[in-house]
Image (tube, rainbow, N blue to C red; front, side, top):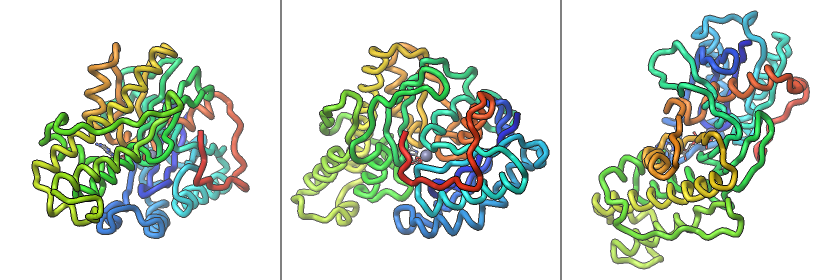
Length: 353
Ligand code: KG4
Ligand code: ZN
């Protein structure tokens, strides 16, 4: 059973082929990130236009890397939400057209669920991938930490899950990106905050953790504002100093200490609630998905505070990719889930779990 996965929800045009829900045969990602860097964030129109240019070559490359032609492909899976409308449309329309023309079943995939399913890939002959030795066991606690989402979800089995809680404002990745801007670190922010934090003292500053009504809910917007106030205070100015004036007033050491203190508290916020959920639901596995799953401080805290080890997917499968979509699509196909009508599937930018 070979499934082609297509992902275009943000600035990555991605396609991959997965076999039997476990084996990664190809994984092609073309990012328009460089085009957005000078604006300090993704420009939706540029992302959508880049997808149009990249989508067919990326799909072709994914098939050829997997040594497949269309006869070998059993189904197509595509991200239909959540994400940027213009970006999603390109992947959805390509998948719909290919499903009709090549007469393949089509599965519509929720991007956020997909992030968790990257962790179900355990085999590949592609060079340079480090995959988990075994698949996660159910009940599974899913920790989704991306640029658009921060969620805790308990899966009792495939397609049988409960959302425990989620962010009420910014996602954790978004907070990393905003702190990067405050500190004048280049886009993409998360990885650069993490690099800067490595030079700083994570206990240099005390920053607040939001107290939420929902036991498993998150909030990161207060933490981001606290970082802004801290930076203003560090340069001896009040709240009226615009954030764009901060980077040149902050020393390298101040930036590193702010980055490290922010990163520690942001990760603790997630890990505190992962521990609570582990106590309550006693999962057999904890699985982390989304761009921030690549963060080494988050991994370190989980390793020291959880009573059992976590296996992670390869760093290249933490951010957006087609493999996670093909992986989840494989379970739709293998478990006989209903197919999607390729004539009517619509992109859903605000799709939730
Ligand atoms: O999952 P993803 O690629 O896209 C979304 O679905 O949103 O996540 C992107 C987010 C961005 O906010 C990025 O700054 C963050 O993941 N990110 C990181 C790291 N690598 C990517 N945040 C912290 N540390 C990292 N190493
Ligand atoms: Zn994502």
